[in-house]
Length: 381
Length: 256
Ligand code: SF4
Ligand code: SF4
Ligand code: SF4
Image 1 (tube, each protein chain N blue to C red):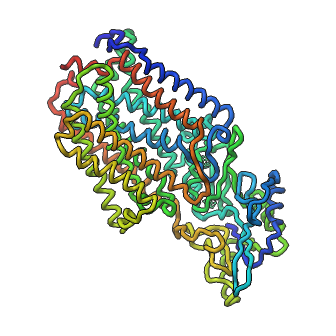
Image 2: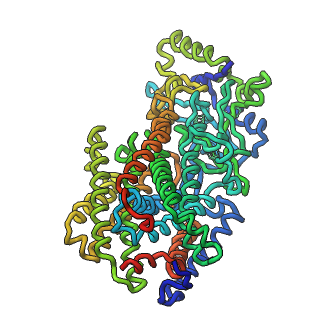
Image 3: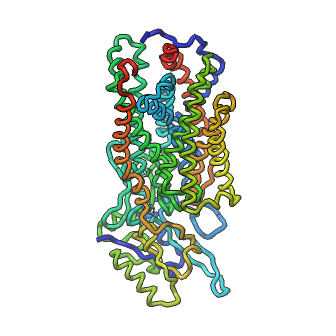
């Protein structure tokens, strides 16, 4: 592997990069304010609504969107579908950055950020939260190890370490560990709400919640990887890899089929189908989240003409993402019903969340420009 | 021996001595809320209000009636809050109280989500926030005393004793006063049973009790999924390794 300094000749500092940087700085300022002033002044959280935007979006949704990492490495390394090799690094990079942001979000959200490490010392294996914290940190380590070799290309003296990390003997165990850990925490994020069965609306309350979170995360991960592949080929003036995108679209359709079928069967078995049509706010949210953002894309993505047209692919994959975001919000917010709170995120909460997303895009650009993320694809062409 | 408390709602006169005693014992500031449209004061439990009497108006034989309901942590036999806590900061002691170790707590607030009775509250306005809730005066109980609120009550609303005796007393009172009490001991089965139980002359849902609470141990809901994860993960790993070996057979080293 060459150690050239740049992998893309496009200008790094475009106006949009400056906007990202600005949002990032505002977000960092808001995060400092939260650390200095405490949760009360910085957020709109209260006893009636203890979990807000940060847990719902930065953590729960962030983890789901980063599911592309383990999904693609599974396809490439385990199933040996070589076609997706060119996007493995980008998918892993997204997952790595995604989890970095999730960790920062979680760090800011917990009341005592400095005691983050306690879960590692005071084991409490009966707690879903414990399982999540452990799997999350371990998986972050896995992603770090997968990411490290590309960073090491910058340091020629460490090329030996780089070769070791890229050897089969290291990659395969890492990939398998990554899939196990992902299953563990992706499902457990739904598992958190198994303990509030009486508060969740029947459309969301189910003893299968953890499995549904896992299945929907796979859909979200695939949709995220497709969108990112489309957008970054656009941004870096490459040809969109239509063959890969078509395959990802098919993958999303299949994942959606499994997820929607599982959810319908679950609703049916427990006799909750009538709630879909009761016309309440909850049923409308469900129809949007599930009908428009899961069933609809499933049907359309099953058609090859849709999968081969970039704009419609972008549209339907986008719907899938929105659906998963809504799924997470619906579950978290309804788990806090009857606690007596009203909630809308504060400016600080919004600024931090926007800053985290902007920071993620910024780091992604930085990595793609200076590290060999898309490079292997160009070599193999 | 595990302790328990029977709260006999019919006996309470709403003097709020227990509220004051609890604040005094735990050095909590008195608060001022202003008028809030009810006689319940303060309107919510909070980080420095472990207990309060809620004033519930009602009607009986066309006459207006009042009920006064003491709210505090119910000290579940299998507490959802303790099973939710990632660091074991909340613990059920064998004496009955569910107690909190602020040093272990990381502040994730999952206990607040998990508690079926919405009891744990948070110190939102400090930089080193703790979770706060009634601790059954564990320090007093350990020393052989009764909880501060019970000691202060002039009407003997609360009967504090070994849990089994408390349950028996509740059953006796219902049996010995036909027509007075409704036939429901709140907390006997709710959330798998709680150390504090209630008897009443009015249906519990009228008094602000959540009667949707599932009559089973809450930790079992999450444990059903959690306990299977290690096995599933190991199964996954074995299956994936087998598939990987099969699918990648014969591929050359440099393909990776
Ligand atoms: S009532 Fe709530 S806070 Fe009290 S022990 Fe039960 S679950 Fe925990
Ligand atoms: S907020 Fe503290 S006590 Fe509550 S679950 Fe989290 S770590 Fe445990
Ligand atoms: S038992 Fe103790 S902590 Fe709980 S309400 Fe009574 S006085 Fe307060």
